[in-house]
Length: 419
Image: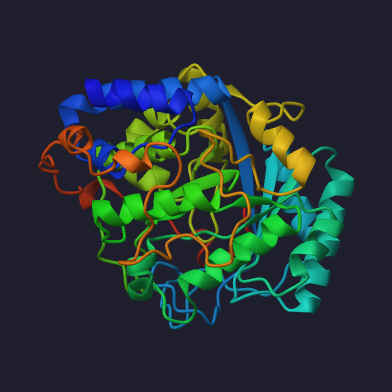
């Protein structure tokens, strides 16, 4: 398949595909699915071998969020039956983190609901980071606290945080349909603040919210320009009691195509298989390991994940290995750039596709909404050859909602998050 050969060649050179090529991946048929996975798998192995990085979520503060993100069970007005509690104490969070580290997690992700942290919240999280680092030598800590104010990223960095997560979630053109209490530009600004403070940026998307193929390509191209080191790919968990409770749009095949497209557009970036994988990929989860080089171990913020031992068995059975604490996750050229610059401003030479200066306008500021492709390959986007690459969209089978179940994390119990 000429399209896949072209995408593999570009991925091995860290060259950006055209929009038409990215759309063509999403339009492939189920008959072509294994070919797509195999092609993207070559790119994944080039930059990450057969390693799988394990990450572990600790929900520091759950529920009662003032923001109205339609996908979130913790949103303003949510009627989802989830655990609600205020801040965990540093020793409680450290104990929860230790459970993940004992299971092989290399990174602990500290998440708190809310629009963004107060300065007092940053102090609280800083003490938690210090406690986790003291008790778990070599562990990476990523904070996810919402929109940052000036100076807060630097304080988290000083406390020992290695990374900051803030997802774009969806395209700029559709963002207002999902959230009204903050803007897409607010999210881009927070990622830039994290990068400027020397934190490794983590920013991804949520698929399955009713978006089009164009929307998916828009947000992934925007992420490529934003240049995070890690891109989590979440699949919507349609919680009852949220506005998107009826959005069951994904099949396992569709989810795999989305992951493959992300890998082709972000070839040398840590692509993390995140929330909703058990719900939507189900028995095809092992195939996703050929596309993503990173997963969450165990539970999510307000829903149960696959048992941790089942994750480890799946990795081993699929022929992959858990990435050790002493192994650098990112390819040498990205790791060296972080060490030299202390942020995500990777080299902007030919083929890198890096954003470099991270201009304050952010990605997706082009006319018409959404982000046009950046870097090598962009010029031929509208060429005849690029257009020829995109087949007519295949008929997509309907999602089987009878095969899935959302399991709420600890609902009706006294269980601590990810205990």
